[in-house]
Amino acid sequence: MSRTVLITGATGTVSTALINAMEGADLDLRALVREESRADGPRSAEVFVGDLDDARSLPPAFEGVQDVWLLTPNGPRAPEHNMNAVWAARQAGVERVVRLSAVGAAHDAPNRSGRLHALSDRETERCGMRWTILRPHWFMQNLLNEAGDISATGTFSLNMASARIGMIDVRDIAECAARVLLDDPDRHHGETYTLTGPRSLTFDEVAGRLSLTLGRSITYLPVSDDAKRKTLLGHGVPGWIVDMLEEYAQAYASAWGDFTTDTVADLLGRPPRDIADFVRDHATAFGSTDD
Ligand SMILES: NC(=O)c1ccc[n+]([C@@H]2O[C@H](COP(=O)([O-])OP(=O)(O)OC[C@H]3O[C@@H](n4cnc5c(N)ncnc54)[C@H](OP(=O)(O)O)[C@@H]3O)[C@@H](O)[C@H]2O)c1
Image (cartoon, rainbow, N blue to C red):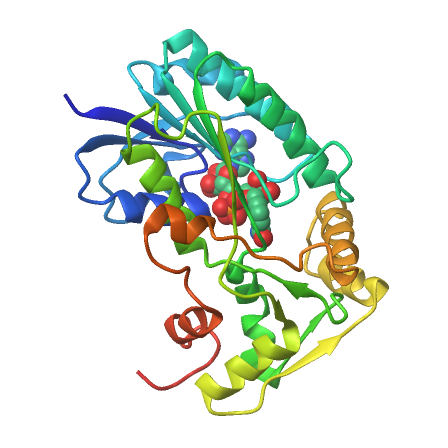
């Protein structure tokens, strides 16, 4: 009998890629969304409405599920979201939780997101179900936030100084998650996988790759924390998120993210996507007019 897999965060970056990665697999997919109207597109998933803020809204989505993909959005309530989902899963007799955490999650991480993820990681490890935790590095897809500037001005501005980061393409995170979810529940039980791309890169190197692929000069402009803060707040990004991003930027600028692992290759049997693959596949978003 097919297993039923519930995907949380189903409209977001990682979970959308995961639903794509599971397309055609022999399982029944469910998508948890806050608003039914946001669950658009040609999807193979059955849609359930529920809100991780509201424990009472969750039981119907978890009933009859064997596997939960648990993604909590960034914010101060992330541990509460994790707790609500884990409890709903336990009550429903779910067998396995596969949780998206973050690179460097630890009680002494230099960023609040890492410390919040550590709380949920601990809870998941003791949840009484089988569990696997994925800790991905900085997403290459974060560069899409700079696509407007890159298209319009040929520059992008980050407060990352000369940081080197083992950044990863979200499609590889999704394929690793799909691998874990499609394997037998015992296979990855109790494992925490730190997922990175193949190389640790500076943003000058990213700019170089963008220039090569787009056929015009793209320049990385390092800016101060205050300048970046002003820009993000000006775009309506909530203060808590701006603080969180600044903590990550400071950590990365001090070489906190300068590493890679072999875990994606071990799980997928192929190397992770390189920045060249990411830029080529998103060239249109960065303003390429070539097909
Ligand atoms: N960006 C990075 O470089 C990076 C690196 C490592 C780890 N991470 C981790 O990745 C996670 C974010 O993943 P993402 O980028 O895929 O997220 P995302 O694109 O921001 O999507 C967040 C998803 O969560 C849903 N959501 C928000 N509030 C919810 C609630 N109260 N109840 C139920 N669903 C809710 C959103 O649904 P709606 O459509 O309803 O808004 C959306 O589907 C975070 O845990 C972050 O720490 C990020």
